[in-house]
Length: 321
Image (tube, rainbow, N blue to C red):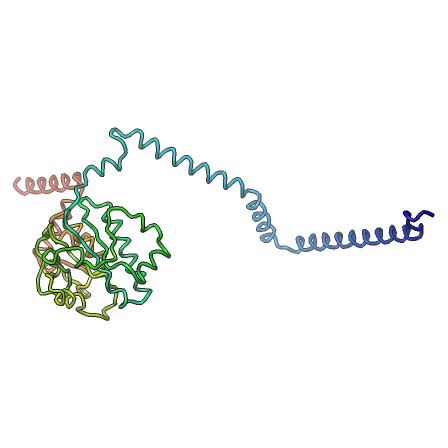
């Protein structure tokens, strides 16, 4: 017997082992199948339906993915065709032609960073995002400044909104506003000021305190303006509006009211366009109520106004007869 060949009895034992293993495996598989079949039979009708639906859902995964892709492509083609079919180019370009930028400078003073907790810094960040978005779509966008930008606010913006570095039509500065503007041009907007802002001077730079403090630092912006020896004023909110809460507004509300006034040239309209309902804002007197009614009528569809006029005319004619 050569050294390269295995003994016959050893080969036989190996074959027997393989057969034995195969039989064991087959028995195990058979048992598993029987167990699964018994489980399926034991299932209720509702459970079997649920299992079938889940199986169909998995089988149709690629089909759903393809349908979503086709829908996206279709929407893209529709948008493209709308843009191409417009007479003078894109609709957005036509809108942008109506925009007349204001020379007014509006500054959010971010020098209160150390007075806020991180949760309040995050709220301020959201308010700044809202200001940026509103200014971009305004008919008379202002010259927008963020000053004393740094600390927690900058870290939060880097972490959650890295696109801020590409923002357009905004000046984001680490310097204090006093280093960027002439002292005589600055007006700090604060609800604690005894001066009331009746008209906007577009040659001025108006400062909004970038602070979310939940009333922990009362009068701090007014004190800051006094310490720096710059002009200060409050919006004429008390002349037109009665509120359930204090007259302290969020940063974005002050910003949006300024934008609304530049468009409408009417403080009352600007306030009631922007102020949220939770503030409980109501007209202060009958004059403002009458003005609101007048505005509501002006917003009424023309057909409704014609019908109302016709009804009143018919009733008067009937009385005369």
